[in-house]
Image (cartoon, rainbow over all chains, first blue to last red; front, side, top):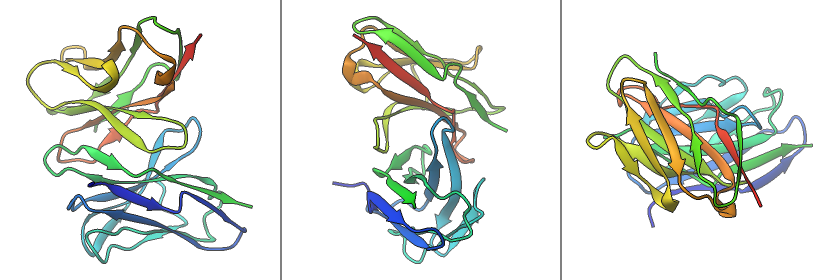
Length: 112
Length: 112
């Protein structure tokens, strides 16, 4: 089945530690996205990549980093500089013809 | 610039009653419109989309939406809701050349 796979589903980390969230897609889409979701705040764009080896900051990029070395993969690192990292993180890719987004199941990060 | 407004943050409705979730958008060019549904601790799934053609769009789970260009609206409707429809619903817009923009979401509560 084609789709977006995020891992891990749940992640607990201590304050000050970097964590990396995995996102893999087999839809052959060029564009991929990372969103953060907090209760009552909808979806906020962290980073996006329109092609391999290129990415741009979204609305809330501070404290996060990404890489796009392969078309299939777009990992997100939550660094120790992110002041409030506890959140639900969603990865997506987009259909180039319509802009429709396809989402993974999400990763819930809790910083203790 | 594009924007999306979901007028209600929460909508309570009795089981088997009809429901309408409202969405208004602003854009200076032709748009593609989407409704997504999110169940607790899951990613977003596409309910339906308007790309062109008939302004009445039918989606999964008995939902439908009507594109109204003059009122710049894309309201989501279901004639009879079930307890399983309890979820958060997101309206989104894109003009294909720009990133997709999401509304802040409407939480649908089904009352027994």
